[in-house]
Image (cartoon, rainbow, N blue to C red; front, side, top):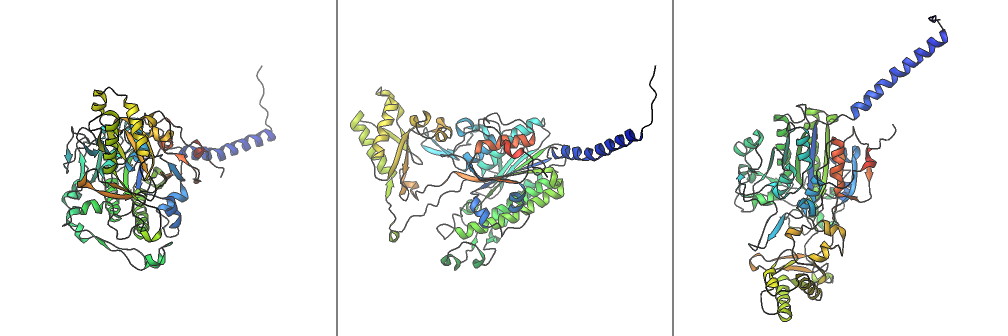
Length: 543
């Protein structure tokens, strides 16, 4: 027998209350879903020489839409640790791949070719030719996939990936293996150049090279302080007296190389990046696109000041305005909620200016040529006649492996003897062999940051304050004062729809950045990334 429905005011009121509760909850749920929506445009920004202390020092001088927008609304990681033995190229490769140099194959921008007795670009590839350049480069030396590669694969090729940077190494590593294009400024003629590894030549590049080339504008460019000297914070009184003024003359054979290391180059990069976004509708095509950009804040080599502190601060102020200009274009094109920004710094180089005798700082000179000669004499006395030391490059000695084999010697023992001898030289703080590194007798991060295929036999560390005189090749003699500097730099991840603003002041491994970005983008991590993502930043705070 069926039950008779009986009207009950109490039940009706309860049902209405439940419906009201559900109606209130549904928009909140929808908001949660929208918060997890994939971005349409990813901006990967690498900044050479970015420092956390300068971001703090100049924060009151920045506008609201550049650095302060990122640090105020994103996750600021003050000290991302790259470990020893890497330069700008190695740091960029670690960020893009999530893998150490021993895995991804890139530790330094240049490597030493023992067969030809010269250093060459790490990305040298004789099988490729240049476009707008005679350089022969490709990402083939990069042995793992990158975030850019995984994004292209995830989108089955529908996602666009482009890279723009002043220098070739940065552009190619950011472009990855599967990128559509990677362009940089040619040292010889100022053209935007690329390698035939990449198939696309976007219209903005062609327009720049043919309609508004840098070569016809370079003489008109001038870099001067953007504020009164007394307005720059932290300057000692004697540095407030003399403003700088840098011009760029076409008659100078190094004009484009110097320009690429100056603040005005960042304006060129931003202008081209904006034209990419607008003309190719990046982030507006229904797929996730990526635009990777390289900037510089490194000390300007053409400065008349030893530490170029004034130019560095001015570079930060100018780059802040360039970031604001870039973000405005992104906001107008795809909307502020549809983009994600990764801004990562590479460790700043330590100053190399010498100490003047009047200050009494302990110093001295270490000659690579003299050290090579003494080491060769020592090995002759111990093992017999021969050219035992064949090369020296960047603080490392290369031994004659053929001679060692011909005399049927234990190569590891010979290297150990060489290291012990070098340790006794004036100015040498330490000496270690490639065997010490690979067998992890020192720092584990030194082992993981060493590419064994390109490594020398014996490495030396010079005492701080001493001048390393690189005169092994008399034609390329140079002096650098040794200083110890941290291998860290700040990184900002700006993805307000996914992570809340926060600040991390404890050191973070550089290898964790790529897996974290992969999680934000909901793609696979690069195939060499073995570290976990920064899971703590994904814990949403209660509103």
